[in-house]
Amino acid sequence: MTAPVTVLDRLLEISDLFQRDLAREFAGSSLTVARTRVLWDLAHEGPSTQHALATRLEVSPRNITGLVDALEAAGYVTREPHPGDRRAFLVSLTPSAAELMREMQRDHAELSDVLLGAVAPSDREALLRGIDAIAERLHDLVSAAEAGRTAARSAGADR
Image 1 (tube, rainbow, N blue to C red):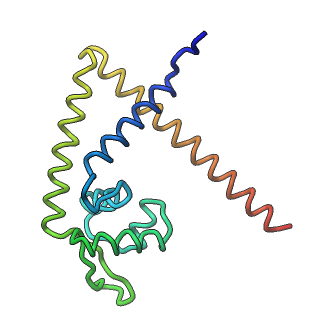
Image 2 (image 1 turned 30 degrees about the vertical axis):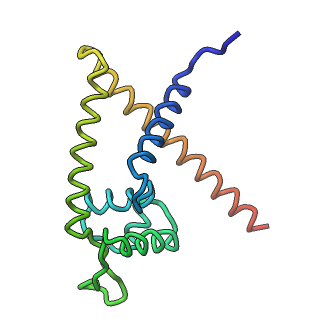
C-alpha cells in the first residue's frame, strides 16, 4: 500500500526542484546558493556592512567574511571604507553584478508568472493566501525550535 502524498511531500519536492534548477543555473560559475543570497540581499538592501549582512542572512561573521571574500575575488562585490565608522567596510555590488541581479529579478518574476499560470485564475488568490499562511507557520515553528534549542543550551551551561 502506498502512503498518500502529503502537502509536506509536495513542498519538499518543489524545494528539491528549485535546488536542482539553481545548481544547473550556477554550474560553471563561481556562484553558489549562499553567495547568491548575499548578492540578492545587496540588490534589495543596498550597500551594507558585513555585520548587517550576517545578521540579515542569519549566518556567522566568519561565514559572511568567507562569502564576501569569494564574491570580491570573483568581481561581484567591492569593499569600501564606511563613511561613518572607520572600523567597518561597506560591501556593494559591482556594476556587472548589479546588472546580473536585475536579470535574475526579471527571470524570477517571469518564473513566478509561469508557475502561477499553472493554477486556474479563480484559485490563485486562495493559493497565494495558503502559501503565505504555510510560510508564516513554518517560520513560527522554526523560530520556536531555535528558541528552545538556545534555551536548552543556556540551561546546560548554567549547570
